[in-house]
Length: 262
Image 1 (cartoon, helix red, strand yellow):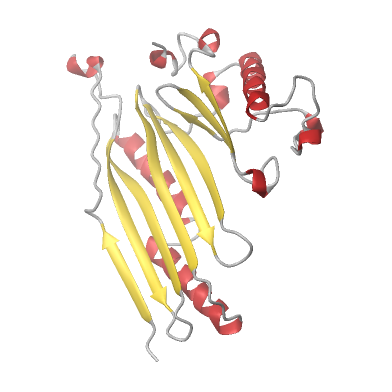
Image 2 (cartoon, one colour):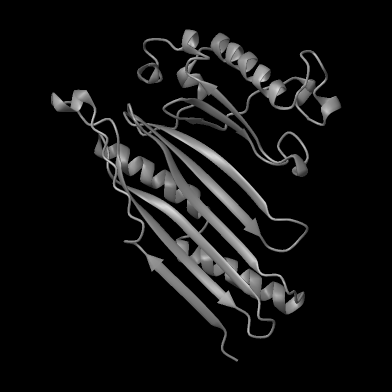
């Protein structure tokens, strides 16, 4: 019996080319952003025995131009390494997903299909900062699907991933954490000083602490705790948005965030 596998490659579909030109570029300085193309690859398998489907879709970007050639190469390498994990190509990754589904159907037949979605979104692309959101959704049986989101912010001078330590001093990070805790307690209506554990959150030593999963935007910083990270799955993810106005006193003139203050 012939199993049907459909592969769609759309290297020219959904192409986004963004060029943001700063005032400095008009006077001959390097552009402070990147241009990129968006690629979509998909593989679908339909089981003839059980009429169930497994589908995997991968959306990723390729940097076409950056302020410096080495930066372009560095970010593209990072995107590919992170997206491919241990696989040699996206084809290999998708085929492995389909093969696992076929094996599962052979041993544990089910009327439920499998689904895998991997997408990259560009959040910020200016002032020598490129911020990317890697979003994942997966269902391969079980009680519920799983979804999570990981942020990376790149320094377009060097191509390196920015950490909080690159933007703030140690004491400033503590102040940032205090600001975030106030917002966190407001989200869940938890009084100041009340035990977080009592409300179902499992921070170390019962003390709120920001993680390193943050996104730089043109309006501020977004911190995200994914499901299961600090509380039960049913609560979902927790997003804390901190505007530049909230932390303007923490942003030094030599910080890469300074140009975002308006």
